[in-house]
Length: 407
Image 1 (cartoon, rainbow, N blue to C red):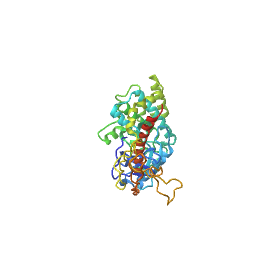
Image 2 (cartoon, helix red, strand yellow):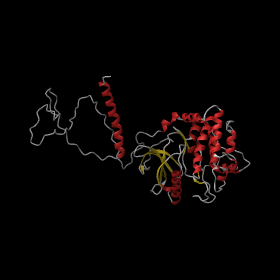
Image 3 (tube, rainbow, N blue to C red):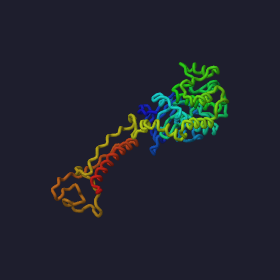
Image 4 (cartoon, rainbow, N blue to C red):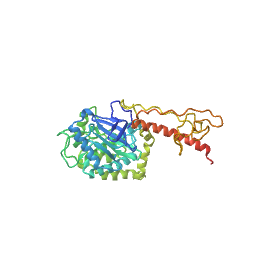
């Protein structure tokens, strides 16, 4: 997820989160990079104003409840939300890394070893979701982020309770990604079982190892027709021989023929161990694969984009004078203890008034002028100025102490 500057019409804050840039957009809304008051990054999802209605609010509220229920190392953590706000929003953990789709399209398919490690991690995470009687229902490469500590699943917007047959969509309405959709999901069957996520994971692993999906076509209708036709087998061309049996079972037409998530984990472990590597070692290799790219996804140190019209633009901070240079501007000093109105004027060189001439003929300077009132600053401006000033001051201190240090 690359961060781009905010547009003039974008919100600058939602709840307690300050928005720094835009991560992505979709049919229902946008996702921003946010920052908590303590500086923690977050992915803040907000519904577009033109699609906010009672139905979208109900679906959004369901997504919030799902995220409050599930948790785990491979799931982006829930941080906060407000489904009743004028612009409903939801904040989750920000994962600095590319999604699986971008990784494969840019660098090519993963090896069978890394694909097996990915499958084991994601299947274990899905097992935890299914334990809560929930389904993801929209597994796809774009919803798998390759972060610095491993892959994570995001976007539970289509999640539903496994045992329920009442949803927020109309009867026979199908919502999801056709190229990763299980046949029973595409047919509109209810209720769905955990096998629907096993199929989605199989489609993700096939894409990870080959760069293509089980069924592809020029239109969604063509894809749906292939998925629903029991005589049309999924395209497994190019898949590594080690993965073929597992992918065949995960993409089976009949949900009952697919393995459970626990069986997927065990078989992925077997694939890595057959190549002489423990699953934990394969996981570390998978994480190291994208290590060089994580820095490009880190949050910026200062806000991106133009400052909104209702906030004054921050003025550039002046460069501080070197700490070892002579002071050329008068410094206001408080009166020393014991001074009172009516005391005689201090003599030249009196330490109480450093702007008076010294005995060595230093040029006198004028008393300090009264300070003009400063313009009001916003929190964003103050943070920016403090950050620049702190860095400059720290650099000067390092130079001074390094020059005078006895060691």
